[in-house]
Image 1 (cartoon, rainbow, N blue to C red):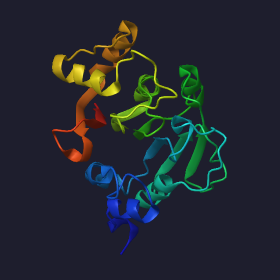
Image 2 (cartoon, rainbow, N blue to C red):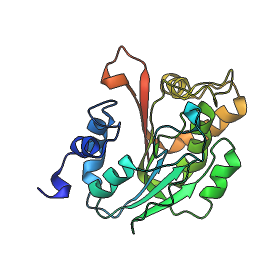
Image 3 (cartoon, one colour):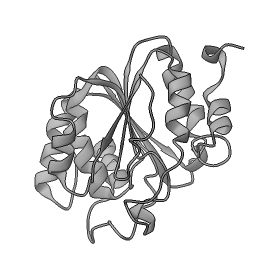
Image 4 (spheres, one colour):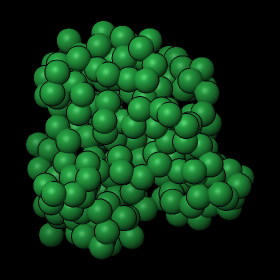
Length: 227
């Protein structure tokens, strides 16, 4: 069986990614979205490369020894250029189609600096710390760098890490629910709401999926399609 015929969930389970059938089941959605892109030379960005960083109280300089989702993406997209970003060091991983950026997303200017000279991406997945301000800073800086027709995804909306989460901040799921209901963003910080509103004219579609796609459960993954 060729790599381009293997289902993404099968690859996730093979490489030990928590995106597969053993935990979040994101790959069921992603295979639907990404299968038409598999033979294209797309530019793909994933933020957050391995569970167990400072969001769980561990040192950012932890020893890292695997990149399950990056290995999965490299096989799934045989022509793609894959960029990975993390607060921990993964520069030891070498592949001609992989580039690594080390970045602490707690400061918005760090995100700006990391992507200052980047060409547009076709797919962006935020699986980083899951802190609300990290997700929101990244979206504000990187959605403009998404190509027309591109897909922006934020994972694990229902959980925020205690070491990072700011008291009183509007959660990302609630932020996008406000836009779905009112076509206007509501945020505890009106200036941030205005920045999101300014981007919304480029939204082709906004979708919130619940935990394990069970409608009675909490919002878990956001998909934004760009015009």
